[in-house]
Amino acid sequence: MRHPQRAPHVPYTAVDRLRRVRLLEPEKRLGMNTRSVRLAIATSFISLAVTLVVQLITPRVLLRAWSEQGYAFTIAIQGFTSYISIADAGVQAVLSRTLLADNDRGDDDLFGARARAGARALGALAASATIVTLIAASVLVSSRLTRLGGGNEPTFLTFAIVATGVGAAVALGGWSTAIECGRGYFARTQGFTAMRIALGGLSMPLMAALGASPSKALISTSILTTSFDFVRALLATRLLPNKGATQISAMHLAWTSRGSFLYSVAGPTQVSLQPAVAALANASSVAAAVPARTLANAAKLLSTAVTNSIWVALSRDFSDNHVSDQTANRWKTISLRLTTLHLAATTALLVLGPLILPLWLGPHAPNAARVLPLFLTEQAALAAIGPSILLWHARGEFGQLARIQILGAIVAVIATPFAAQRYGGFGVGAASAIALVTITVPMLLFRESQFWSAMKLSPMVMMGPRTFGAASIALCAFLSVVYPAAVWCALVGFAVLLAASWRQLVARNVRQSP
Image (cartoon, rainbow, N blue to C red; front, side, top):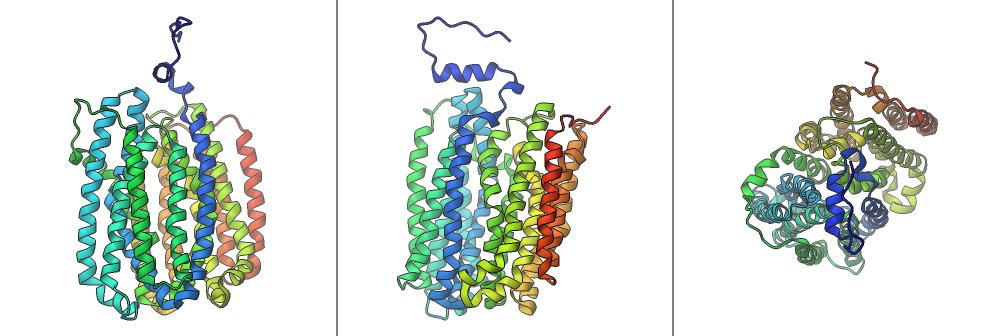
């Protein structure tokens, strides 16, 4: 397509650039080549480094300062209040994706109307969820939390302030993220994420080391992070255009996000509610399970940082029901690289984890070392479905993803109290890993294979190398529970993955023969 020639004296403005992008064919404006996305990935590595520091410092310091009982009290408070994040109801994810589309079209009027509707929707949802959570906590778990705190902590006051902070994070932080991504400032989002992790994650161990009680540390950290979210939201308002004639109902926006709601439930159910339930069932179980899971989760930090940086931009490539050869080849490269990053870290932790735990946890290391292989089995399985999760994010099919993840999360949470009471931390790890491997992973891989078949692409070419590589390393991790020497077979499995990945990356034909 030929573009109109501009006179030399007319400046090439940002509006001209946007107009030019809209005129280009979709094949030539694939969002993954943008400088902003590359900068966001680089910035996400800072967030990754901060997260690693926080995760390494926190359990050791808190266990030393407050013992297993105080640590379990902290985990329970954070776990139950974190469940307020489901109040997002998927609005942030849908809002980010639709605002980016409005921005690409140059429709500032619709962008502003949708952004303001998002603010109202997130605010109402967060306030409602905070109130409901406070009522539920006072009726269902208040007495058990008080006993867990030894009767010396202002349990309900602490719970109320932390819950309010989580609600503010949903309303202010979630909205700010959507606005920044909608304007294409992906690196800015990752930068703010790194700063918030540092502020919230390091203040807890610092206050514990200074002698503060669990409740004082939780309250102070909540006030700090809420103040940060408020300042960030004020800065995000500067990205909004002037109010136009278009109006969008907050209720309408929330309703259009309903497919994402279950997805917003699935994450907190597995990540936050499961350890909170385990803490109430058996306080000593979280002293082993939470540090082991924390170390195992380091395996996915790098791939997750990349995923969070690119999924909104990648949605441009999957905005319709057609996948071009160029997009398919791009996807093949991205998915293999993500899985390889994840499995490389998992394999390294299988070998080095038993050496790291004694240096990190001291006397608590033996129990955590017994649980670690189960959580690394979980990580190897997650490496296979990481690209599947990215695909459904990019396509905006959050409901498809959520229905599968919530089923596995519910099974894990139901099994956790019984397993924790009988087997301690080992039971918590077993409940989590078995639910993931038997429910979530096979169902997500099956749905992804159906998608590629519908696009006339070979599922074996698009998914095969990463799936077989992840399966081999997951098997090695599981066997190492009984036979510790089995960790070395993971190195062989990873070498096979690299060889298969290279073979697939150099293959040109991704589409099935007619």
